[in-house]
Amino acid sequence: MRIRLRMRLVLLTMCLGLIAPLRGAFAQDDLKTEAPDPAAIKAEQIKFQKVKSPVPFSNKSIARGKMIYRRFCTECHGVNGKAQIDVVANATNLTEPSKYLHGTTEGEIYHSIHDGAGVDMPPFKVQSIKGNDFWNLVNFVRSLWPEDKRPALQPDDAKPDDAAD
Image 1: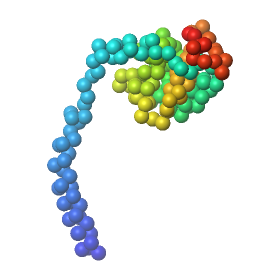
Image 2 (image 1 turned 180 degrees about the vertical axis):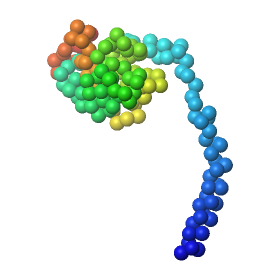
Image 3 (image 1 turned 90 degrees about the vertical axis):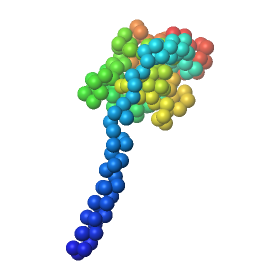
Image 4 (image 1 turned 60 degrees about the horizontal axis):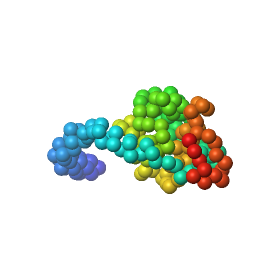
């Protein structure tokens, strides 16, 4: 029994001796990233300002977007979109488009969700959200806005060209 315990201690000591030099290779300073260039961010934003959704702002799209929102977004933005959660202090209140830092057009919202928006909003392109579900999510987010700020509701069978802001 004592021999087994000594052998374990010897193996543990050897392993720690091999791992200790590696600690310096992963210093915290190496993990820091540079702040994004504001000019590059603005250029990206301008590129997406005029992008239009291929999915009409309809009840069907909003319902699908709500399902996606509940799965991926409530942790930071809350169930009602008001971001009154202590977990993420900088989460945007989605019910107040005037407070959006990265734009309120369809394309800008899509870009914020798909590619992330600064340090606090991660990109969701790596999640299991695919294709038009990003646009369904954009439509749901816009449905949280005050009624006078929302786009006009389109029929569920409307074509993208029929949908207008």
